[in-house]
Length: 263
Image 1 (tube, rainbow, N blue to C red):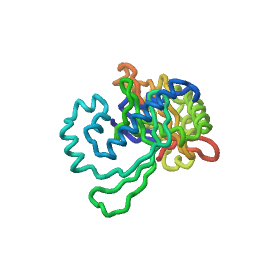
Image 2 (image 1 turned 90 degrees about the vertical axis):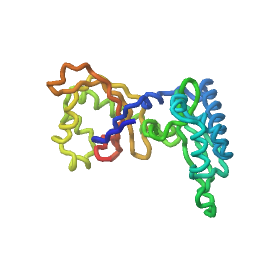
Image 3 (image 1 turned 180 degrees about the vertical axis):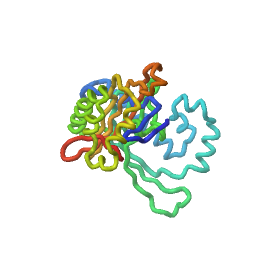
Image 4 (image 1 turned 60 degrees about the horizontal axis):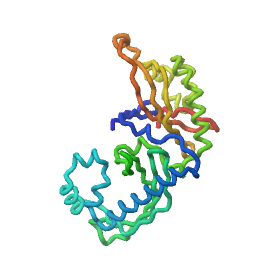
C-alpha cells in the first residue's frame, strides 16, 4: 500500500476502502451467519497462537500472500523470533459489515525474551476481511484503509459528517476552492493559507465521487472516498479521467465538522 499525507488525507493504492459499506439491521440472517463464522475463525487463529501451532497459523494468511511465502520458513521464524507468548485469550464481541469484520478480544501475553516479566493484559479490536468467501485478518500495512469497529464509533456524528461532506462536493466539482476552503478547520487556516490550499487542490478537476465509509470517533472523523478526476496541467489534459481513492481527515469543532488539514 502506498500512502501520501497531504491536507488531511491519505492517498491509498489498494481496494480496502471499498469493503465496509452500509449494513442491514441486526436481524439479518446473513449478518448472523457471518459473525458466527468469523468468531469461529478468530477462535481457531488465536488458539493456534496460544498453542504456538505455527503450521495452523500459517493458514490465516490470505491465499495470495501464502503463495509468496514458504511455510517451513515461516514456522521456523515464528518458533525462534515471535516476540510474544499468548497465555490466554477471550473473544467478547464480533461484528461484520459486508466484507469487513471486527473481533473484540482480550488476551494476556508475556515477552519471550523476558520470561520473568509479569503477564500483560491487552484489549483490542482486530480487523478482518472476507477474501474468496473466507475471513482473514487484515494485513498490518493495510489497517489504515479500514474503519474502526462500529462499537467504537458515533453513528449520529457519522451521519452529520457524511452530510457535511456531500454538502461540500458541489464546491469541489466547480473548482470553487475559496468556498471549499471554508470547510477546513478554522484553526488550520493560519498554517494552510488559501493560496496553499489552492496549490494542492487545484492540481485536479473533480468529476464525480463515491463514499465508501465514514468514521467518527470522539470528534475525529475520516471519510474514505473515490474521486473521479483528471489533471489540470495543460500538457496532460488529454489523458483520460482516473479514479483516486483517499481517506480524508475531518474534525468536529464548535459542533460542526471541518476538513482537518494538519493532522
